Amino acid sequence: MPEVLQAPLVVEFPFTRSLGPVQSAFLTGLRERVVLGVATTDGRTLVPPVEYDPVTADELRDLVEVAPTGTVTTWAFNHEPRRGQPLATPFAWVLVRLDGADTALLHALDVPGPDAVRTGMRVRIRWAEERTGAITDIACFEPYDGEPVPPGGADGTFEDRVTGIVAPARLDYTYSPGRAQSAYIAALSGRRIVGERCPSCRKVYVPPRGACPTCGVATAEQVEVGPAGTVTTFCIVNIKAKNLDIEVPYVYAHIALDGADLALHGRIGGIPYDQVRMGLRVEPVWTDGGRYPDHYRPTGEPDADYETYKELL
Image (cartoon, rainbow, N blue to C red; front, side, top):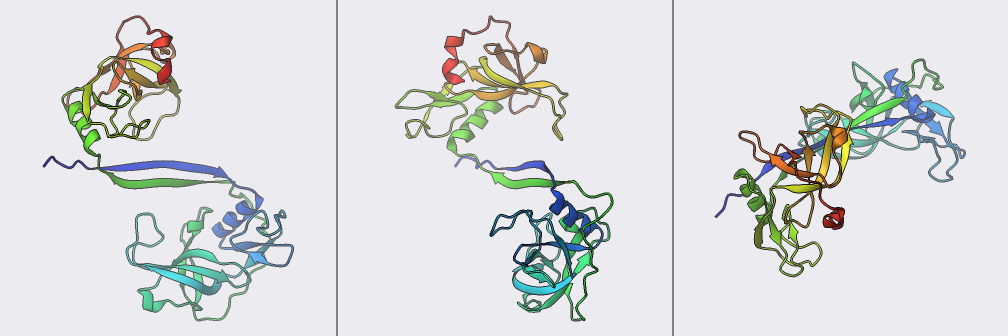
């Protein structure tokens, strides 16, 4: 039985967004240990606040401070916390309606087990020691059996308001290629590039997918392509990626390898970025020990005629 290939993969990027006046006041308030809601035209107080009434779509701007204490309305226990969650030990996810609010706020409740949490229990905010103006300024909720804590009457006026946030987005997963891509990867280890031909339309797909996306039939016939190819389209990258040791600007291109009916992508090197062009003939460059081409460089051949690659754009 052939080896089943697996590899851990991570897709990660920082999502940056600006804040309107309501969200700005809410997050700045958390930094100052104040929880702000917003009043609707029918007298409700929404926490977390929104900038438009979810019922009437009216613009909302009247900020109202609510208490740091509240009541659990519903909950679910998390036995195995994951990376980046509020607590490293088992905890409960809870919806808490803070005193003075008409809606509930989702956060973590620090309790030792599911028997220690119940709908209707009283809780209070545990503030983070270091606060920056983010929802994580609330470290978590904790059980509370004291007297209700009245709000201080803050109106949302703060100095040095938070105007934007950066929320990291990350997906960790394990990738296991199927038969077709396993054969493609095995060929790359021998510095060969192979695709698969559709038995119906006869197109050769690289990398192979195991089935023809046009005809919907399985593919099995292997076809070696390239190694040279033609740049069909490209982009100039001007922003340096984290953990990628390539100086900007550089060019990333779609490359139609000779004999293939699908363009793959790769970096173009060995030529100034502003001289890369459609139709440029290129070949792969392998590094010692590399499992795939490091980049593609010009072959020195004349540019390909547009008619030869226009269907692969």
